[in-house]
Image (tube, rainbow, N blue to C red):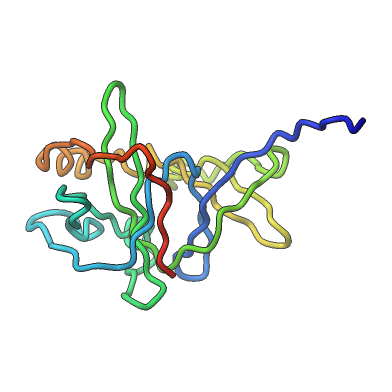
Length: 177
């Protein structure tokens, strides 16, 4: 009889922003959309690209590349909008994260994830939950709640009603490559 070995691992959705690979906890991901028209909201920060229609609800979309100072996501066949759930106290907000591409769902052993490095007082890296090692590459693991916690994003969420689009009982991650 084989002995079950418990491995302590976590699953992440990996995506690219330029040449870098980022990851978010798979449990924060509601779905993955092909790039679609984004309606710009006037007087919002540049990284707030606007809103998209997700089952009848306006969902704010953040250009992660712009938010992190890496340029702007350009529309290609691989461009995706990752719809994530942000939990704050008793509410759930839904946001879109614009990325150059979505790669894969990756399982990382907890011992292969290091805490974020200290960068000094002038560099703000509190949105990085850790740095994973996969093969010979580093993967920056994002803390979704902190990435989407800026006042501008919270203000836009409240302005749009901050109610999550209805989730079906059988919702699963959808990707149209």
